[in-house]
Length: 329
Image 1: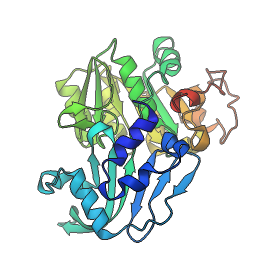
Image 2: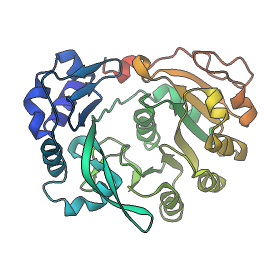
Image 3: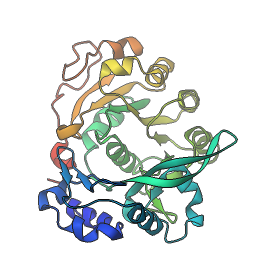
């Protein structure tokens, strides 16, 4: 299924706006990555480089309610947990993010009411975009752990998914999929291609999922998205001989130098490679791959489009791009 077909599949999950969203310009449909609904405001379709406002539309609370009921198969009770967490995985791997008013109990969010915004993230699979990266980091260079760095909407999850697909062809691989965005499990079945030898702990909190994976599934590789405070568990995992493939939100290598998780993983030796991805109109571009020997090496890499001049740089072709593949060209 190409990117335009994925867009129209996602549109079918927004019953009040199907006709409006089917009439957007073809180039918008082909490049769409998100559909935004906000109460009292127009429908917006986001692409990596453009924002298309659907003229004449105004989202109502009733529209939002109709969409949420559709997401849940018209059984809100069956999706109670997902609704409280504000995220629902849909057929085809699409993801609905929801925000509204929190219902608190005992200091924790137990439910959400008066949902006011929906962010429908359109699923995107781009097989093959991680082949060069995996070849350099895993097959040839003695990788212990690889961390993908990049700002939001830089294709980190898409790249990580393809890494898992490639790696699982020759090694036992486990994905800790706390947000359901890597494998996109829908009724027990992965909606994305994660390879033949890959297990998924779906919707598990990362810390719990990491421990369960090591105890129960004997992985050779462990894949985990959006690492924040789980570096102790991941370092322990690496100490048991498991290789890591991770992602962390960082806009530059200098930001990585200030990131507690990245520095802890590097200092412990759990991660010895870091790749930086571009966002925006350059989504999916690999700006560089570095050998990491400690936080000092990370900190000297510069920022923005600067090229790292230190001894740890191993990928000379920093302009190596997967953008065309990522856009389906």
